[in-house]
Image (cartoon, rainbow, N blue to C red):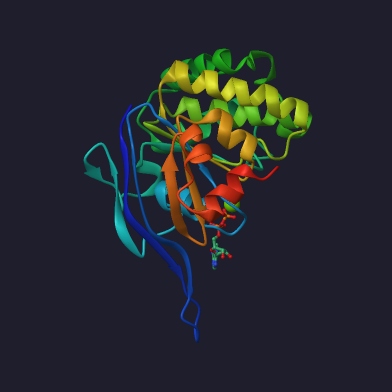
Length: 244
Ligand code: ADP
Ligand code: MG
């Protein structure tokens, strides 16, 4: 468990001959230990880039990230205490569910095989996927694959969960079920979570606070009710108020 601080994060993607795209522009957010923040905004507003900066998949152009009070901007991805869950599940197709879940820990090389298997079994129990562990990803439904992906995140025992539109490939009914599951999981494990969505319903129902992005800039961070009743600007009013 940990607090997570985004301190004036900036990311510019540049290619030769242009000024570059400012994907994330001076974004600061203080996330408390155990808090669930939903990062919401239209397509292209910089949400995924923020998660990729936090997980170390992209390098910062400026700013710093702190887990508790430790800066992690220069720490290698595999050594950051963060676990990321993606929209497309990103399971290794040639590995069983069990091996998908244990792979990252084996790569880290800190735990014995026995300890790793214990963690996998524990995570499988939490996610209710004990019966699926020996199956290959292509034998699993979308919802089952996402449960395995969540299990793989739990196995790492991270300080921070990062989730990038984890439910948007699921049908509406399953999405509702999984929404509740993720909320329960987060409150049981009490892991600091940054959850990205472009879905207003998810934003309004899931988070302790929502952070609203547009064009790489943070527009407002507030409780869902505050954002709804006291929007910081016209963009927030339109975005939160409009039907999804
Ligand atoms: P979101 O997740 O909110 O849809 P992204 O973070 O994916 O937004 O993208 C923010 C902006 O950065 C967009 O303009 C996108 O085209 C640009 N972008 C993202 N990744 C790259 C990249 N690797 N190279 C160049 N531009 C990128
Ligand atoms: Mg995205």
